[in-house]
Image 1 (cartoon, rainbow, N blue to C red):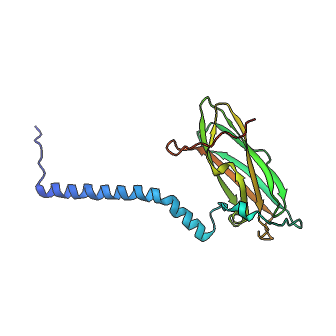
Image 2 (cartoon, rainbow, N blue to C red):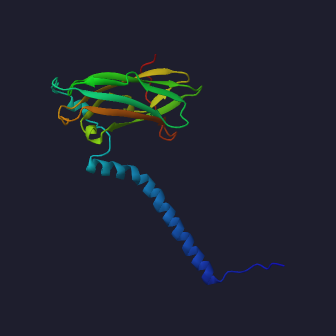
Image 3 (cartoon, one colour):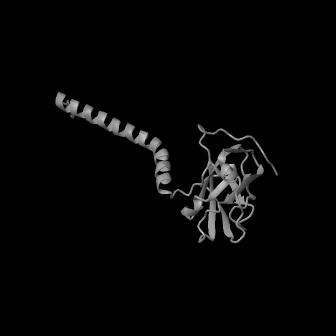
Amino acid sequence: MNTPVRMSAKQSQANQRLAVRLGLVALFFVGFGFALVPLYDVLCQLTGISGKTRPDAALASQNTQVDVSRTIKVEFLSHTMPGVALEFKPEQFSMQVHPGEVVHTSYVVRNLTDKVFVAQAVPSVTPATAALHFEKIECFCFQQQTIQPGETRTMPLVFFVNTKADRDLSELTLSYTIFEAPAAQAKAAPLKEQT
């Protein structure tokens, strides 16, 4: 027969201390997880390697002169996260632009499900040095998008490449990754344009 083994008071206290320490470690990592996004943003801002564009592009576009002496090829890419039932693509896959020229283009999204889908698009510009000079004036990525079942929507993008961009810059890539917005954060944008 097995007889239950009783812990000594010393062993019981050691187990309690260990449980408290493990709980504190878990709490630290949860807090660290929440702090990671702002810390990453600060690090990227300090190093200039984030691939994110600046939010003050509308102000920067005022009084911008177009530099017709050079062109920059802008390529447009789109990605959907695994498990996202959306069709998402640029209307144009590339174009030649002059620095300072305000350009209008768009991406098209289609909900392949029979459910409302709240989506968020996240942009990235490469090379990273070009991100400092790629200015979005209007972008569907500024807010979450509510896409109705079976809906196809054209989402506008208005941008320019700043004339201060390095003269060696001849090509850049704008890539969007679209994913389902977390339910707790889903604050959908009003429906704008439907096709």
